[in-house]
Image (cartoon, rainbow, N blue to C red):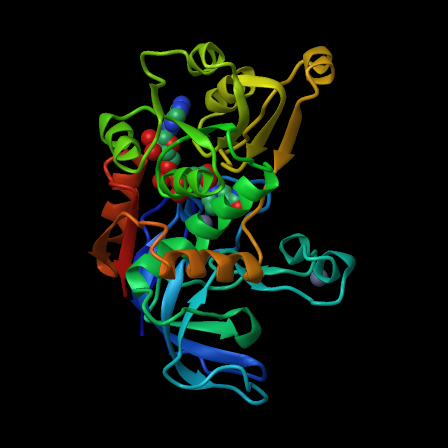
Length: 336
Ligand code: NAD
Ligand code: ZN
Ligand code: ZN
């Protein structure tokens, strides 16, 4: 099978031929139809984070495809089922986090395209329990971005406890942000969308943003404060400055949800103001299988719109450049 492989951090991925993985007990092999390009895959390929993957590895964790082969002991899936293969490739199911609905915090978790080979390939080896069924009527190219960008931002909006009439700032209208905006509206919020390209700000308007803020020419904190301050801000831009601006744009009692992961990202906050203003700063990591089921259900009901462009897997390096230069419309979905 064809796979896109990282051999050295910061170097172009290499398209190479690998054997099709055989499923072991509890596993399935999935024939990939669509594989979203999340900015996390770029961080992985660049070795941006303190905990690094080990080259050679195959990135990708927004995979959607059909079950091709089934290992011993798997009864939840059949050949031909359409499934999504997310970042959370495995969690133990037994620890305190797993037992309390926080499998995304499991210390024994395995992550697709990071600690195990991912979905930038024609076939992907999944743990059957973590391959989520895609409902009928949800097309695989919509389902792929929902599998990380969707579930992550749905969870972030829940973690931010968005309530009707809240002003919600979405900082960064990329793959994640264009969906975050829609979930914030579904939860009843008024949305202020912040970005640094004309195309993304235009897209935000088309998707129903109530306020758009161009961080190149406006001070996002000042604009948010002119509207009374944000109740919730979701940080999705790969830029430390954007976190500081979102923090400064909060109303008293506001919640800043950190999601983006810039290399060596830091946010320095004044303790006095944080205490006096009753501000919360919360980290949010992807979402659970139950969150993903909600995301697919909302999409099947026609309540979200996924904006994507497709590229062949062989154009993965050009596609990464497009994302880094802000040229991709919202999400690029690779076709293995
Ligand atoms: P993306 O490149 O598609 O989107 C980023 C957007 O931010 C772009 O539209 C860009 O124009 C905009 N931007 C850049 N600088 C800005 C600024 N100063 N102010 C406002 N907007 C700005 O990336 P993505 O795939 O949406 O991922 C975003 C980040 O989220 C990445 O760091 C990724 O690793 C991270 N991520 C985290 C989780 C999690 O579970 N916490 C899950 C998925 C992705
Ligand atoms: Zn666990
Ligand atoms: Zn992702």
